Amino acid sequence: VQLVESGGGLVQAGGSLRLSCEASGATFSIIQMGWYRQVPGKQRELVATITSRGDSTSYAESVKGRFTILRGNAGNWMYLQMDSLKPEDTALYYCNARTERGFFEYDYWGQGTQVTVSS
Image (cartoon, rainbow, N blue to C red; front, side, top):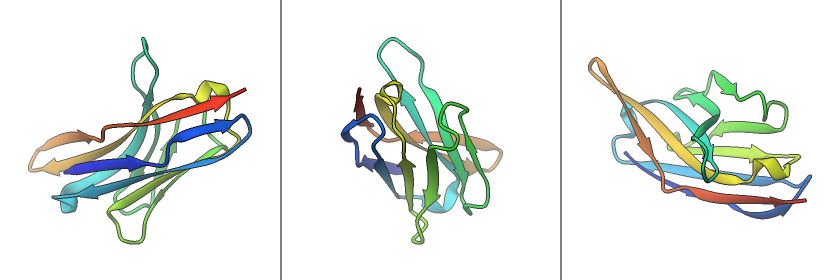
C-alpha cells in the first residue's frame, strides 16, 4: 500500500485546512485509516482514525469538535478537515493505513505533510 498526503500549509489561528491522503496498491486489505502528527523531539501521536467502511471514527481529545476525518466515495481517499486551528496543531501530519493479511496487521505511512498555524 502506498500513501500520498497533500493539503498542508501555513494558516492563521482560527483558520481551516483540509488534508488529503490517496491510497494505492493493495487497498482491498485496508481495515482502518488514520492521521497522526509529530513535532520535533516528540513522539508521533494519533489524531483520528476511521474504519475502512467509514462507519466508525475516533479522535484525540485535543482535536474533538474541531477536526473531522472522512473517507472519499472512491474508497481510496481519506481526508482530514481541520477547523478552528490552533498554534499547537502545528506538526508534520502523516497518513496511516492498517492492513490485515491472515492473522497479521501491518501499518503503512505516507511521507507527511507540514501544517503550520501562526498565532
